[in-house]
Length: 548
Image 1 (cartoon, helix red, strand yellow):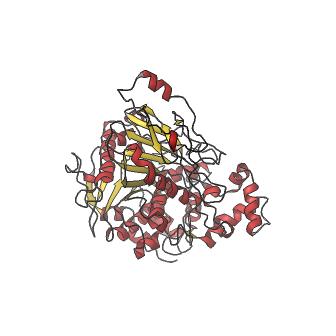
Image 2 (cartoon, helix red, strand yellow; image 1 turned 90 degrees about the vertical axis):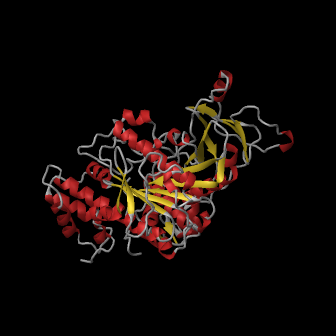
Image 3 (cartoon, helix red, strand yellow; image 1 turned 45 degrees about the vertical axis):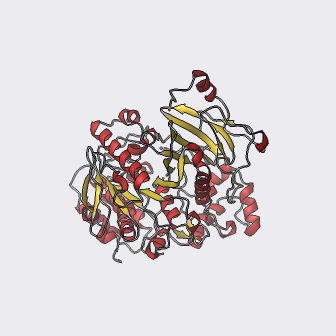
C-alpha cells in the first residue's frame, strides 16, 4: 500500500412491518440479470423492498434498520476502455447479503484477491422510512491498487442519522490507471467513479435519496479520488459537497508522459507485449491474463494529468480556481506515517540502527531530489526522546509530515479562500488497531486509515477491536459531523454542526485565514488553531523546502 510521492512544489436493517416470508424470500437470489425491458408489461411492485432504476427493478433486503441493496451493477467496460451503463434487464433482480466481485487485485491486508474484471458494482444503504435523504457516496482507498466498496465498511451509523450511503468499486492498478499514450485517457478508475456518480444522479431518487444533495467522501486513494473529481471538469454537477480524509498526498500527480515513464513503461516491459507499440500494444495488453497484468503492475500508481478526465493536476486546479467549487471538509491524522513505517519494517527496512535509519530516510525522500535527506534525518532524530523506538518514531514523523499533513496544510490554504472549508486533525492515539491480524511491534497511534472506523464501523466492531467509552464517544461525534455536513454543508453558517448547534458536540469553526480547525480527539473534539497543526508537522519547511 506504499504510496509513491511526486514532488509537490514542482511538476471499510429489519423493516418491522415486513412478514417473515418476505424476508426469507429476499435473502436468496442472484447478483445480476440480462435482457431487455418491456414497459408495456411493467407493474407497480408490491414488495416494499422492490424499486425501479433505469436499468430495471431490484429487490433489496432488510438489515439492521436499513433497506440494503448490495451488488447493483452500475457499469460495464472492455479492458482499457471507458465504462458504460449496462443494458436494462426485464425481470426484477433479487439481491442478497452478497457483494459484487471486487475489482482485480493481489491479496493484501487491504483487499481480497480477485481476477474478475466484471466488477463495476455499487451498494446502496437507505433508511427504512420513506423520505428525501442526503446522499453520501464513499470512495474506498488502497493506493489505487487494493480495496473495494464492500464488507469492510458498515454504514449503519450514518444511515441511522438520516442519509443514504452508496459505496462502490472502481478499476484498480494497471487495469484502472496504467498511464500510456497508446491507451489514451487511461484514468479508467476515475471514469468508473464518474459513471457511478451519474448512476446515482439518475437513480438514487428511487432509494429516497436526494440527487441534488450528494456528498462524495473517501480516504487515502479514495480521498485523492475525491480531490481528483474536484479537479475534473467531467465531474461537474455530479456532487455538491466533498469530504477528504488523508487524501492530500501527491497533489501535483503525474503528467501522462511522466506517468508512462514511471509506471506505464516498466509495466509493459514486464509482459510479453514489451516490443509492441500503438494499436498492437493495446491488443496485446487486452490479450493478457489478469494474473499476468497483476504480476507486472507497479506497487502503487497515480492518476495521470493532461487527459480529458484530468486536464490539470489537483494542486494546479486549486491554485487557478479551475475546479468544481463545492464546500469541503478536509483533514489528516496525527500519525499518518505509522502505517507505512509498519509496512517498511515488513519489507525489511532496518530502523533499529543509525545507518539503517539513514538509508531508509534516504530511500523515502529520494522521490524529491531537492531534499537533503541526511540533514532531515538528523533534524527529525533530534526531535525525538531517546527510547528503543528512537529511529521508528523519527521515520514515522517524516512520513507523516512530508507525505500527508503538510500537503494537507497547503491545500487548506488554497481552498479556504475559494470555498467554504472545514479542517480537522484526527489525534486519537488510543484508536483501535484496524489492521486485522497484524500485531505491530510499536504503537501505531492515530495512524493512516484509523479514523475510517469512527465513521464507517458499528459500535460492536469498534468494541471488538478494543475501543473504550472515549473512542465510542468520539465516533458518535464524528458520525454527527459527517452527516450534518451532508445535510447542511451548503450553508456556511451551519456546515458540519447541524441546525441545533453541534448537537451537543463542539462547534466546528469554518476555516478562514489564520483560523481554527477541529482536533478530533477522544472523548471530546476541540477547536484549535491551524497553526498548532502546522507547527507540529513542521509545515513551514515542508511547504517550501530548501534545496541542498
